[in-house]
Structure formats: C-alpha cells, structure tokens
Length: 242
Ligand code: GLP
Image (tube, rainbow, N blue to C red; front, side):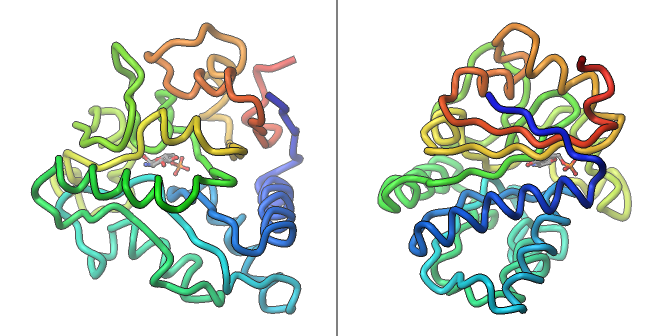
C-alpha cells in the first residue's frame, strides 16, 4: 500500500487525476472502475479540464462503476448513473455505450448481479479501480459484514450509510435501502486500486483501514493485501496517522 499525503482536497484531486491520466495515456483502451460520492468529484473535474485542453482522449476507454441504488433508474437525479453522466461522461469523449453501471431498475437481484459480473469478466478486467471510503470502512457498498463478499451482490445499506447519504436526498425516507455493488473479489481483481480520502471525518476510519487488522468489519482493510493499492489522503484525513 502506498499512501500519498495531499495538502487539501484540490491537491488530492489533482494527484488522483494524474494517476488516472497516466493510465489512460499508457493504455488508451483501458478499463476504468469508477466511483461516486463527494470524494472523486474534484478528480473528475480535473480530468474534464485536461480533456478540454486536449491532453486526454477517452474515446477508447471502457468504464465500469462500482455500484447503484436498487430501484433508481438513469433519469433519477440521485441514481449513480445520473451522477456519472453529469459529473463526468457528459463532458468527455467517452463512448457512453461502453460505460457500465449496475441496472438499478432490475428487480431480480440475482439477474442484475450475474449480468454485471459478466460485464466485468468480459471486459478483460479492470485496469484501475477508483474508490472512495465510507465512514464505516465500506468500499462501493460493501458494508461491514461477517465475511468479505465475493462478486456483485445486493446489499441492505446500514443505518450509518443511509444517514450519510441522506444529504443528497430530500429526506431520509427517500434514501433507497438496498443497492447493487461489486464485491470485494471484483475490486481486489483490479490491477491497480486508487483510493481518495478527504476530510477530518474520515481520519478514524482511514487509520483503521491502513493500520488495523484486516477484517470484513472494516471492508477497506482488505486493500492491505492488494499488490498495487494507492491511497491519496488530504492532511485532515491523515490527522491521526504519524
Ligand atoms: C457511498 C458510495 C461509495 C462512496 C462512499 C463515500 O456510500 N457508495 O462508493 O465511496 O459513499 O462517499 P463520500 O466520498 O461522499 O464520502
């Protein structure tokens, strides 16, 4: 695990965008695993800026997102498909037919998850997986559990995650209770993993992820076993690390 300390969110976003850019330049037809949440928004803004300057070309890139709320469709402005379109895809030259997000409108969970695992497997594998970090250590929507989940699966969101995500909805009752998410196996099989962590409120969990035991109760701790995992954290998130 390599940890880069960034000065602030802007510095973190620039550093993360640099790594993603390097991946796209080195392998124009790469597969990017992408994430939602507040943490990667600055990274996406930076990538858009460099694309507009003519420094980046996404025309051959495939993207596969981590997760989606069950029950929300692409037109819903709280769906992760909508998030990705508005925060990245609408502003770069990626071919939208090669951007994948789990189908939140598929009511048959087994089918939704099997279909998504097939997409990941037939893509040839994820070259770089971008991740944010939940306050309880979740990655994607892999919540603390008794065992690490394998492939794509349907999860019941924990109360703390529902509470954390309420800020994006009109009220807590509107937050979906379930989501489809890639599993730990899907994430760990990515060739490179890049985690962006920002803010004092992530300091406790970041310390556990990096220095604590590897346990499914802190899902991101499994990244200690990944052979090419990079964490970029700002000073506030690093507050409890030496
Ligand atoms: C959500 C997403 C995760 C994300 C996490 C942290 O629950 N499913 O993929 O990493 O929240 O979000 P944020 O970056 O807004 O703190």
